[in-house]
Image (cartoon, rainbow, N blue to C red; front, side):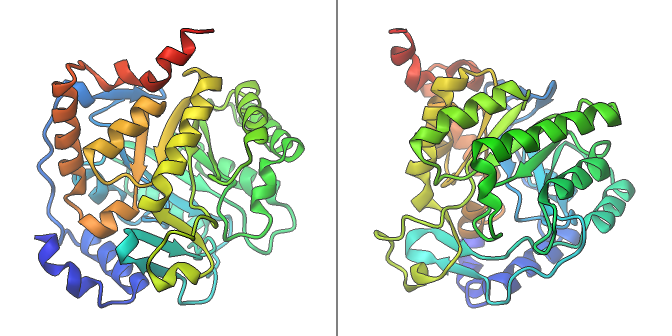
Length: 353
């Protein structure tokens, strides 16, 4: 059905189309997907079982308006945000661009957010019906980014199953400086101390950039282990890799997501898995739009995946289609459960250690 109306939707400005999708979900104009249940794709994270490993990435439901509708579409888990302490408009429009030939998006939204208080009120009045994460980040004009993350922790620690610390958006100035050893160590230390003050064990997840240098991978991985981070999201959008794109919008400034990010994301997942060795869960993002794309992320080391751009191009039924394709792949490979093959691409390498 979506393929029949996609051309009409794509005549709209991307942000207008997104707003229409949010309204459609809010008023149940998009029907609940029939999700094929199968033990082979059931999994667990943060001590909770989920029916499948497919999550919706932060950026779609920025202001926590439709998360329960997204569960109805069949997502195994939902992450909202990025939420900033105070409401902010973000960058000037236009700020989202489709690259149809490349099955990609470029965005420079800049953390447009209703603010933590409004989002908190929405969640309190509408309890999430599944594994629920909140992605938090700092305001553009803040004088203290670390304090903004702590505000996010204080606001949401008792309303979510996990909190994602977004240090990797390419659209917020100097945000990626948190990939530096000293700054990341300081931030994670502050979060650990604040958790003790709040007497909470809420899992902390860190979302990283795909553009980090190889020499920083070990440093970041070791810091995640040292500070008891429970999962890492690999990865956010990239502000590089435009050479092989076809669409004229490739010249637009912002973060590139979708199929062009897939290879780079998988390679980075693989590198982190070799260091983390499943001590920290990896959530793989970038180019997920099929059962095969999920399978590749899992064998490279991801325990779960998230998608967003894939749904823009393939519609709301993507979750059920991806799950069905993944079930078929696992059956053909005689795999009982996805957890059995996490990082299996590395097994021959690990055997040499």
